[in-house]
Length: 230
Image 1: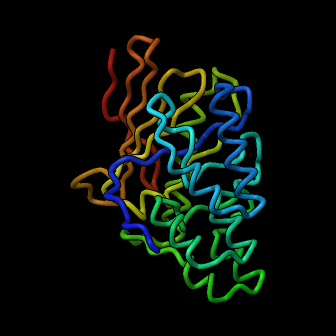
Image 2: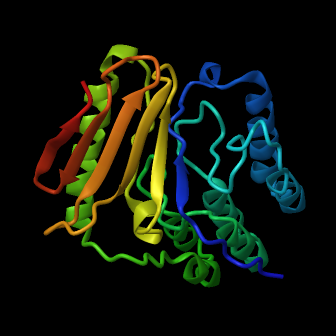
């Protein structure tokens, strides 16, 4: 049975690459989810994703990666690799899994499925972005967004998984939150209203650093500082 797709206003980008940056309880849950995903125990995956821990609202999601894994393989990538039942893919997508998500090698779940000959599954995994942008524009904006994040976090000396625009193309009305360990804050990314060209508005701040608030506009042409909190 396909779950009804939720109305999405908030997206969480998993930027954490170091296992030590996760709380032990969160790490244990993430490992349990990753074990179930990689072993193809999809009923257990569904049980874990159905958890409603009020104190751990972002510990588990349909886009959660194995902590410390640099491959960028999310549950949909594993489902594609395993040739999982179509109901598994439908359920993950209904839970908010992003079909646009790329692994470290640039492959989407659709790419993985086609590479392994799972053609019917690949058709199901084809991204359906609600907002269309050409690949070159997406790549340019992502390049400048990555540079902005790197500049704003360089003093933390922590490796981060750079955000991708795919989720914001699937849900153009949503805000994507990029939490940065050690920053006690992060980056809130959304499409800017009434811009003449595709523009990502990025608000960033640290809760423990006064005057750290910034708003930048990121386009295919570069990054512009819009406001600064002194």
